[in-house]
Length: 135
Image (cartoon, rainbow, N blue to C red; front, side):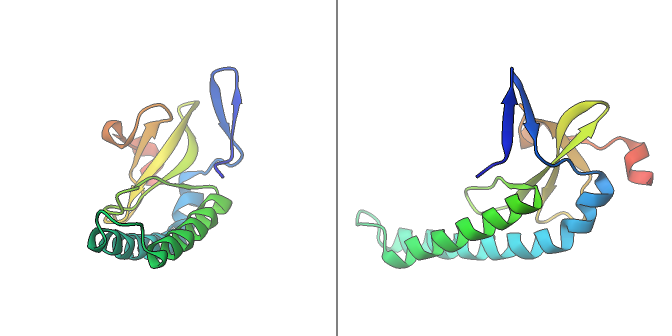
């Protein structure tokens, strides 16, 4: 599902966002992520209630709904990253200082203010350059 091409060692995305473009998508992204988080929590509760048994059909259906929502994000060009369904992490491919990076947003944040390299994860995210925040 993820639209990434590998050229040599480099990862190339089909879409790159400017900060402004990512921010324009954020209202819709927030709505989709809220739906993912709600369904993810429901799915986790169903699975926990049936521990040691087969995964309930209802949980499988919820997972299919989550997959549909994730595909919707990917069609927009961004990527959902929180498989524990706790924080709703989303990455937007971008170029910062000439490097392919991921603008990083978390559902409890009001704006996109962070990024990390493609190889680093959320734990290594950095504040966006000041000149980006002013524009």
